[in-house]
Amino acid sequence: MKMNCWEHKRCGREPEGSKVQELGVCAAAVEKRLDGVHGGINAGRTCWVVAGTLCGGEVQGTFAEKMGNCRKCDFYQAVWHEEVGDFETVSQLHERLIRARVAAS
Image (cartoon, rainbow, N blue to C red; front, side, top):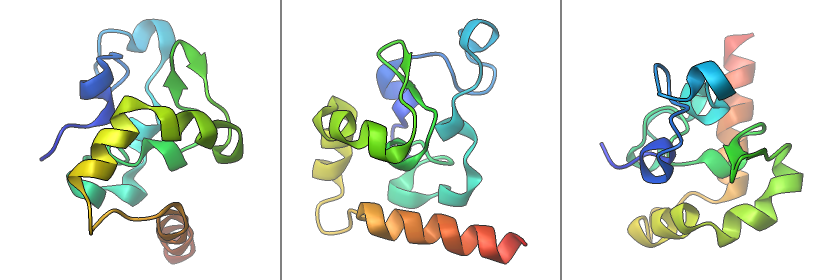
């Protein structure tokens, strides 16, 4: 597996991470519908499409509220460069989330 956002950022918000008691588990670390995308665990390499992630010490909110900051993020940029040619766009990732939600209902 490739490096996930919580490993890159060392935020400690992955399940059983060092900051879970203080800040809670990050939504990206438990979003199973994106497991395996870009070689990550859960949404660990697609955190920019997951609402409620905590970056820079602040909850980032909805996708629309956070995407501008995410595109500037060093982790987003690293994944984009590593996945050249296979990088899934935001629309593709949202479609995966929708299809998984529909399949589960």
